[in-house]
Length: 326
Image (tube, rainbow, N blue to C red):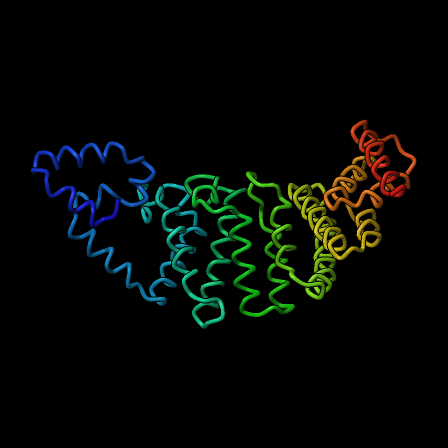
């Protein structure tokens, strides 16, 4: 029903009927929606709510920037995570609505404008805080990306597209790569962000340009790993190394350079069990439906493969033999 149609319908009701309708509709509104749209405040202070809404619609970029920066400052000082006298309990619980609004408003500014450049920077800063909040309590709950209704990988994709729209250069590529170091949302596979990064390398030239920069990242992570031995971060850094190796390997595969991808994976992927390493590698090769490459890699090593791989080998070997006969 359109708003105009709604107005025509409610004209026929008297005051009592309208009151009953409002109460019934209010009961049916989910609590989350009531909080997000501040329904209670709207009903209690109708005039003020309309005034605030009008002011919000005409918000300036300068004021938006100040609001975001103040919010970031409060987050850094744990004012949205623990009781304090600056941000009250009710306000702390509404942090997600602020972020959702910031995300929406900042994305209104085209990436290749002066305001758009600053908006992208602010989006990155928000992204870093949300990612950090997946591991350490910085807000009133841990599921930071779930709270704002935007997947971490999709938020990252938005950042990449804004950066590359403005300028595809080494600086921006390195910035995108550096963001892969953030704490990953446990509700997504850690490789999702790497898949997003690869998907934004739309040409062979861009993929070839990204490979050495990703390799530099691995070298930096390996140095960090040496420093963090027997430290809580050792496991996380090791995962980042493996995810980056995964990205480089897959870029080689998309370039149809399977030998280079396999060689790089074998030399750099951190896994004590060779059979497990082979399982991971063969699973990736399979996604490209290159059964010839899969069979060759399988046959290159005399190891005791798990039964699932043995079965696949028999299946793929048969497929390959059929192709040869044709």
